[in-house]
Length: 124
Length: 108
Image 1 (cartoon, chains in turn green, purple):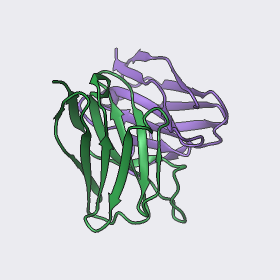
Image 2 (cartoon, chains in turn brown, red):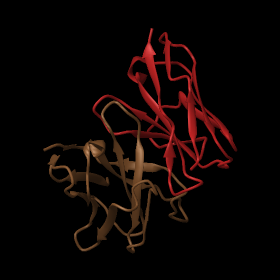
Image 3 (cartoon, rainbow over the protein chains, first blue to last red):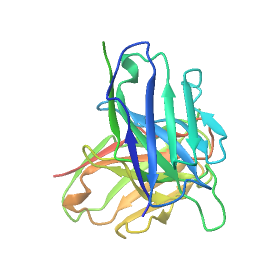
Image 4 (cartoon, each protein chain N blue to C red):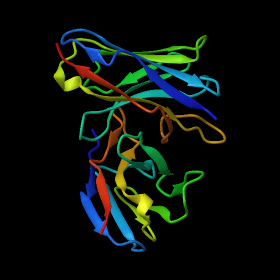
């Protein structure tokens, strides 16, 4: 079955760039929407944005000026870059896939597969 | 942004009880609503999609209903393993996709 695994540094300095990668195993990255979602300690879930396998993207307006999500179909991976980080960006970061119906794949659906999450702390 | 408001924020019930969680959207979202269960230290798990469709492998004691702005998640007979935080999420109006604030379910 399809599995997602996040990887990247667990500690990032303020003002630097947070970079994470999500590796898709057990299936193809094609035809799906791939998302990043984060959860500050003890708080709720915040959608960061998505990349479609074709490369199109869409971001949360609250983060749009600092976020880039990209897809590498040759490696079956997608990535998150968040620049100019502050302590407010400290969170568990999840990658997640939007489910497809039997006939179509759109963002108007639910996140059916999630990575285990990776904790990123912003601190000097 | 579409705001998702869950109630109650926490509920304590006995094993075997029926538990109902409500999620209200600040504007109509048709049936583009999902419910997730999150246990400590784990990623959220999809329970219900399209407001009322049960995700494969999820026990039948979980059910969802509603459309437009008002939705409910019902656990028909609470089990000890159902202790978790439950989140709703809308997928109609984005960006951004938004989640409810969560409801913590505990055993009395």
